[in-house]
Image (cartoon, rainbow, N blue to C red):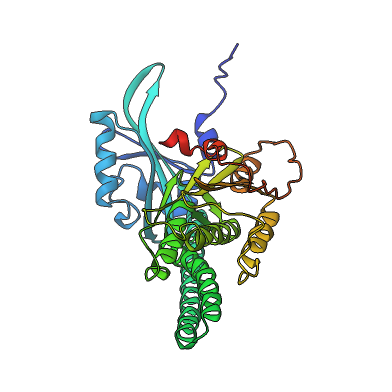
Length: 382
């Protein structure tokens, strides 16, 4: 049980506090100031006690908003918590104070007194401002870097297009077009980074939309009516993963645009669908074209596109399954969601280690039955 010792001097206890403390009456006249108050703000008891708080220390406390708050404590039983007062004080100079005030309670009943506590938080506030300025400078620097990279990529792209227009060899033109698409895919990424918050995170859907728009634009002269549609979850991924996934989607969509609708007179469709599976990202690229035969390879093709797909998926520890038939082709991609894994790790969540992955290619003579498309959520999304 608590024992009250009448020999304890409560003023001595208050004087031992490092925070400056004032006790005011209902008219906000100073009745008591502890030792820390005098040490921090100067003055004597004769210059402090019996005076309004707004008149002491060269009236430094007579700041309009603080005055309004203190005048509301007794009549309206208002608690002031964490009010920041930034002023130049007579003794200590420029400081930031954290001020709290409340009505005094005694033996369960409120009194007509106000307890005011003042803490010097200048160093903490200055450190916070310095950190915020550093973040802002870093943000501005990264924005400038992304703008420069985007502009440099745009310059390279212009040179590729100029060279392509001057070539008379169709095969050479096609090679430059495919290179330009790969370059433009990366340029779209840095354009997104330049106009967003430079968090290092890229939203996949707007990125894929830009990649597919570039393919549509470049193939506009040869486009006989096919269209590209991007749908699904707007997944956040890191810059490195976005570069790899953008390159993969670019190659698959460009292949479909070039080969899937040869000889077709009806309107074709290419669809890119994304699905968030928690620890995995599922991406499906489908078309309703003529399908392909692995035994009939385009003699002008170098196979570089699929080698790039395999290379990027290998770096992502992902895998791809391809199915093709008379009703079209489906490429089903599954990669670990490394951004989600990083979030779990930073929050202390432990996940089981993943088994190593390999790139898998399903034989093209298997008829497309919608299985891969269904697993990627395209059927459900309909």
